[in-house]
Length: 129
Image (cartoon, rainbow, N blue to C red; front, side, top):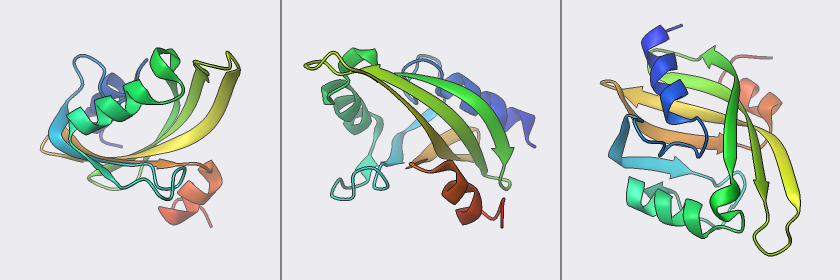
């Protein structure tokens, strides 16, 4: 496992997700949430991601905790993530266990694909049969 890539991902996905201060995210990175929101286009750029994050039903309450890292290949790390949030209107607390497939090039996060199902993510990336 590339410890350098893991550290880049670790810094980038603590607390509020891939735009945490100090994260090495390319300004034109892609953010793919189509597994959750099939009608949502892939977001391009950190500003589009910030708008999406800040305007969602979870608001400022969304937090991420990396639980486990998997070496996929020279560019990708799969992270099992525990995401928690509270609905802005409903006040209902929500916890999900998802996976983030993170692509890194030249020390920068250039793509994040969110997988709803961890087992399917492992299979899709050839890490499980």
